[in-house]
Length: 298
Image (cartoon, rainbow, N blue to C red; front, top):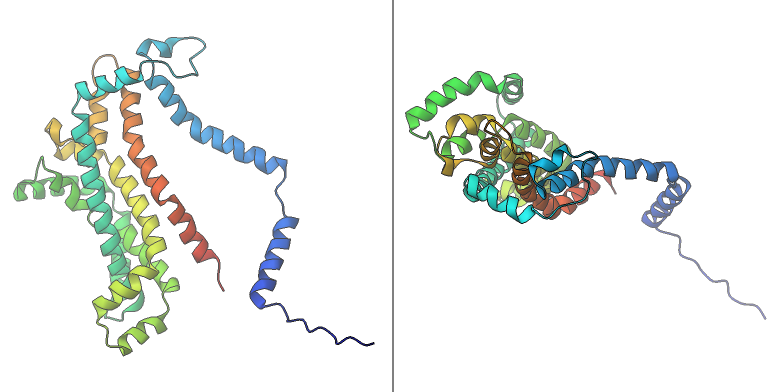
C-alpha cells in the first residue's frame, strides 16, 4: 500500500529571515560580563537621583555625618513645605510647563515643516539656505543676549513668559535633524502619488509627512522639552518677578544666602525632576518603537 507524498509549502522569506535572526541572536547570547556591565551602568546612573532623595528627606546637618546617610529620612514632607514657603515654586512649575510645552510644540511643527521643504521640495538656493541655517549653530548664544534683550524691551515683553518662549520657537538643530530624517524616511513616490490625487502642499505635509516623521518628531520633542525645561541663563536675565520665575531660576533662589541649605536645594531639584521623569515614562516606549521602526527594514 503506497501513501501519497505530503506536500510541504516552502517557508516564506520573512519567516526564514526571522529564523536566521533568532539563531544569530542565540549564538550571540550575552554573558555574565554584559549583565554586570549593565548593572554597573544602571547603578551609577540612578545613584545620584536616589541620593538626592536621601538628602531631600533629611536636614542639612545630615550631610556632615561620617559615614554619610544612605537611607531616606523622615523630613521629606517638611522640606517640601519649606520649598513652597521660601519661593513660589508652584508658579515656577506652571511657568516652566507653559514655556516647555509651547517651545516643544513650535519647534517640532516648524522644524518638520522646514525639513519637509528642504528634503523634498525643489526651490532656488535650497542648499545655500540650509547651509545658512546650520551655520547659525556655530554662533554662541551669549553673542545675541544684548540685542535680544534690547528687542524684548522694544516689544515690552521683559518680565513676561513671551520673552522666554519667543526666542526658542524654532532652532537650527531641529531643522537639520528633521531634514536628514525625512530625506531617507519619506519616499518621493508617496508625495507624487498625493499630488496626483490633487492634494495641496500643506495637505501633503499634514496627512503624509507628519505621520512619516512621527518617530523623529518624538525624539526631537523630548530633547527640546528637556532643553527648554533646563534653560537657566536667558530666563535669569529677562525675568525679575518671583511669580514669573521658571524652575531653574527658582532653584537658584533656593541656593542663595550665606549658608546654602543643601537639603532644601535638593528637595527643589527632586521636585523639578519629576516632570522630566513623567515625560520619559510617557514617551519612552514611543521613542524606542520609532528607533526600531527605523532600524528594521523589510
